[in-house]
Amino acid sequence: MLSQELGERNRQLLGQRSEKQQMMDRFSIRYVGLRDLNSKLEKSRHQLMLSHKMSAIGQLAAGVAHEINKSIGYINSFFPTFQRK
Image (cartoon, rainbow, N blue to C red; front, top):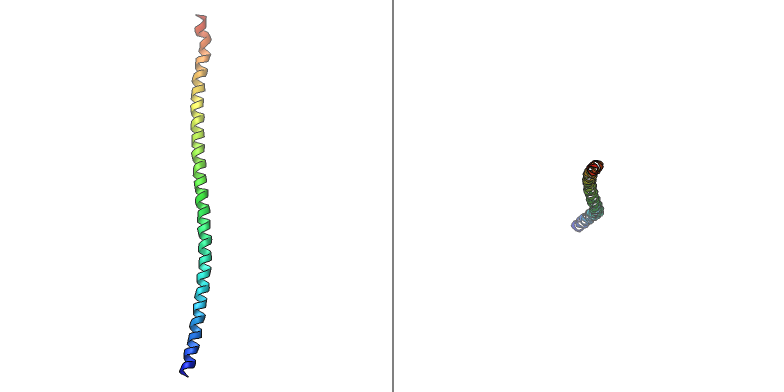
């Protein structure tokens, strides 16, 4: 009788171990999926940061070019006046 009880309890424990192993397998699969998703998110964040930096550099370059062209235009507009005298 004791051996029957021990056998039954052993089967129950094996069943619980199997369920826990299945849960661990599911968690492992989810972990890998989340790790991959996190990696993609990090790459996207990096690309977005680079895009913002390039945009800022472009705006700065456009502002500098505008100021240079404005100064050159101002000088060119008065150049004929200086040549007449």
